[in-house]
Image 1 (cartoon, rainbow, N blue to C red):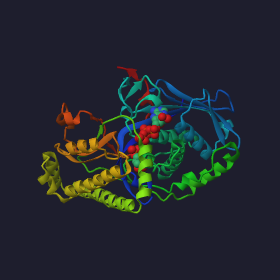
Image 2 (cartoon, rainbow, N blue to C red):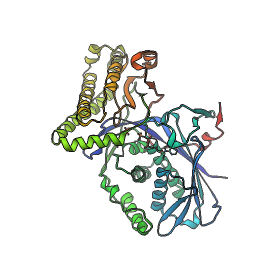
Image 3 (tube, rainbow, N blue to C red):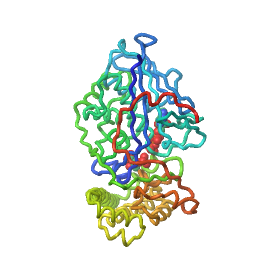
Image 4 (cartoon, rainbow, N blue to C red):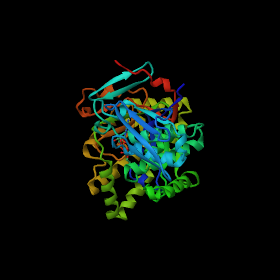
Length: 452
Ligand SMILES: Nc1ncnc2c1ncn2[C@@H]1O[C@H](COP(=O)(O)OP(=O)(O)OP(=O)(O)O)[C@@H](O)[C@H]1O
Ligand SMILES: C[C@@](O)(CCOP(=O)(O)O)CC(=O)O
């Protein structure tokens, strides 16, 4: 019997903390999403004994497939059969293999099938395949050619692939054990950072691993100080990686949180194509040039980010008192500012978001980076007039891609916005908050997917 295991990891929306979270002193609020990346992993006797292969198949994207032949000298190296590149897959395989360091002659061939939920990518030119439990969009183009919605597909992929391959090399791997999850997280952060070719804050990988969290990053040098993986340095790479994963305190924060009951996150997709790297470059350049007034702006944003987090905590506490909480939800649903502002926590959360947005508009003006461009200001302001909307931000790096609203769970935004000129560019994504990061799934749930 073929042994199989399956795992999934969620996408993300960074509600507050954009840019500041690149520095280890600032906290951010990250909501994990119901859109998940999945991996089904199985092994079979190596076709070429002593020369095993790992195949990663992503058949939703024009049957994309990468097959790596493994070599072991002092550490592991890989060659892809057709020279096809996928840096995220490559870095996961290299780091997981070099960390677990299995003896190559005992290794079987590994097959990993990736499935990604439809919200990660634009759905044009795709068709659905489903079984009674799951459905996935199949595209006519390869993964690099299908526009992304910005939910963190690479972080989801890296996290779930790390878990899947680790489960082959450590049979007893349990994604619900704290120690195993921490190992998965560190290996996934290293791989993601190396594949991106830049040091992001890692909030997306942390959320894919741990779920909805308050996140504060680790020092970037932990990863950038690793030696390169060239054949001559692979032995030392292996030792340093092991030390980094098993013996180093990364001193980061990933405290689990959840949105208050009866509030939900609504993501509106506005535009395809993300320019995070360019935006970050411009904001960092502005920060250096405008220092020290830029640091005062960051401190100001940070105090409002903290107020936002405190307000959500307070609303969570108030939700335990049904009478008060029903009154709060009714006020949000009424769309009446006076009724909403009569609740201090609601008034304060709106004030903190207004303050954050105001500062980002200032940064936009001073840096030339479109963190909150005018069209998004207009759109968010229009959203704030809808019934049932508590507050709204441009998630992550900002820009033209998306908006994120906190609404009551009884609000029907689609019916309020359909056909209205102000909302003509918005598609509401079918998403909810996910509390949990990596999950173990049932492999047979991915079998027999058929076209509609
Ligand atoms: N289903 C998949 N199968 C194989 N590779 C994938 C898959 N999803 C993502 N990837 C890899 O991740 C890359 C996209 O990563 P990138 O960081 O640019 O986007 P993202 O994580 O979705 O965006 P953002 O960070 O803005 O949320 C793809 O080019 C591919 O290499
Ligand atoms: C600007 C930044 O703080 C957030 C980017 O978020 P997103 O990829 O736009 O969701 C960068 C980062 O934290 O890696």
